[in-house]
Amino acid sequence: MISGGAGKRSGGGPAKCKRCREPAKVEVARANAAFCADCFLHYVRNQVTKAIDEHSMFDKTDRLLVCVSGGKDSLALWDILMDMGYDTTGFYIALWTGEDYCSESRDKCEAFAEKRGGKLIVHDLKEDEGFTIEQIAREGRRTPCSVCGLTKRYLTNLAASQGGYDVLVTGHNLDDEAATLMGNTLHWQTEYIARQMPALPSTHAKLVKKVKPLYRVSERETAAYSIIRGIDYIVEECPLVAGNTQIRYKDALNSLERLSPGTKQQFFFGYLDKAAPLFAASDPVVLRECNECGQPTPGEVCAYCRAKKQLRAKTRPAVEIEEVAP
Ligand code: Q46
Ligand code: ZN
Image 1 (spheres, rainbow, N blue to C red):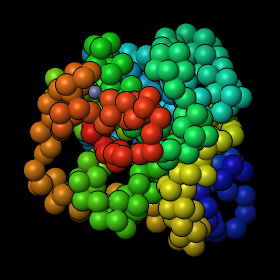
Image 2: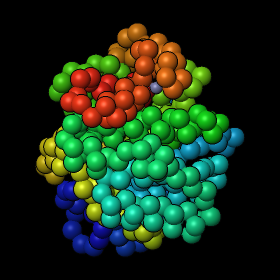
Image 3: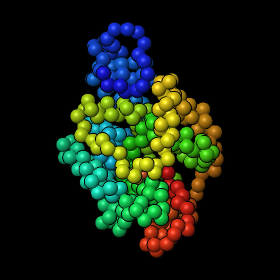
Image 4: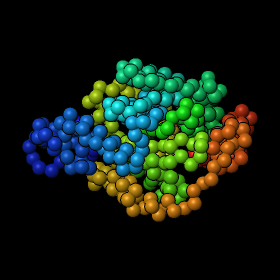
């Protein structure tokens, strides 16, 4: 039995699929359910459909740019959206967080795209931007994850905007969203909490709508989905993940989830139902165009242009990286 979530199953004897009563293969403790392989795929697709519908994410007329990393979440999501008949293009950024890791993750994306007949766009940080995340980590002048996050947000929006895509789609799952919410709440970063919605509308002509259709699906569930579907994804984590503060929030939430299955969904879904409307009342950030690159930013020069200038100058950090565009 593949565990789609920690916890004990109630009742004795071999588990039966909740939907068809055949022998179960995947346990989903947070839903107090187990499914056979086919019904588990149906369950995951249902969760994605629910997310798309509840947040009016997109429809069949929209062109979607799907961010893929070679990991289980983004490839599973691309697989699901293709199966559902959406107009998708994959977008992979070679971040160079590690030589081998980068080659392997790119290979996984390219192999998946070829197998499924999907179109994949590759943006290479080393060739196209003139720096790598590994180099930033080595030089120790900035936190690699903060530059990496900023770079991904900037380049994915730029690609979607310049390519005329209607929606930018990311593979953030329930674990990601619960961990981010926990971090933002512990530090009472109210602006970030307000923006942690599964669908963020475009608030500027060059800022593309951004959505997270996997927010109802846990990390274990995307892993189980990928295994059942035969998706070949990169299992290793990014070599620089130790510097990612989200990991400790994920560990804490996993401990709670083990003791009380459903904790993550209660926390995040509860935020969406009860707290998000309160945060949404705060004034939206007004965006203008960056003086240097023309991309949307709340200030005169965007955080990405400032970060690149700083990297080129090879000086100690003088500016803080800020979140410019959700
Ligand atoms: S890829 Fe980038 Fe993550 Fe690696 S450097 Fe950090 S942020 S851990 S999702
Ligand atoms: Zn700029």
